[in-house]
Image 1 (spheres, one colour):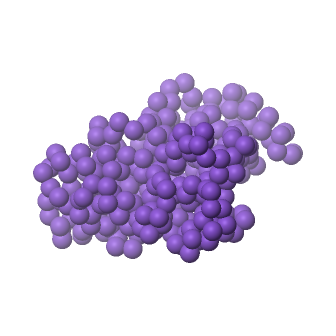
Image 2 (cartoon, rainbow, N blue to C red):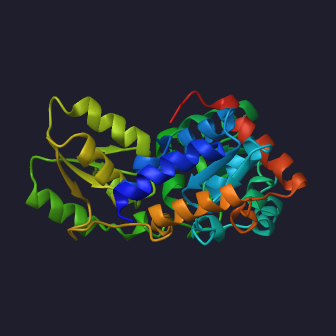
Image 3 (tube, rainbow, N blue to C red):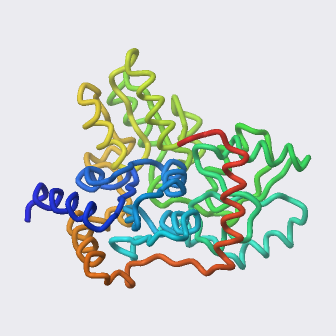
Length: 324
């Protein structure tokens, strides 16, 4: 079947099986097209918690996001088209490492990026996303009366938080990062500015500190999108430092804009793990749901781990007013 046939069958199978698809902005456009909700990690978390009518949630993203959906909505069947779609950054910080850091830094609040596995979330005080990291970290530090926090696993997000809050941020692990955003180099920014002198530079806080400092704006996926939308009347050209999926999403939504990746490579930079999800895999998974054969694709979280992790996720919603 071609893409349009697959999309039509997917829509029919969703209705037949009582399934909703949550898709991240980093998915290819064809996958975004069949999503019932498209968002960043915070928006997807909020949506996952609110799913009521559907029996099944297909998560078109990476493993830690599907775990969050299961933790927040445990009565739903949460499934992934490809369980090998795992986030390398999330795998850089495990529960045992966090316990070791907490022993070395007693008394400091432990705040983890949502880009972590459930076992790690179970060992922290509160979760944050790139959308609300500054807000959450400030609130927790003020409540505890401390000037330092433990945070992981992204060193670049730690820099972003430290710069905007004045907090001393101890990163767990010291060199943790997103391999996609960490590929961007300051030389790329310099070159792209020379090529497109009228463009605004907008980057994700998972980019290196020098890139964040040199950009016109640094913010989460949704914050970048909102910034561009708010500035469209003043500027029609943007250089964007993030995964190619968001750039493709924006280009299709706003064809009058001229958009460039921060990477000088024409194809931009993509997350190979996000791209493991395809229309064909979603279609095949829906057929498995129809046949009652989804165990190999189902996401499960041990009850004791889920309970502790949910506490840290709920704390994020308490401290954060951001919606995505």
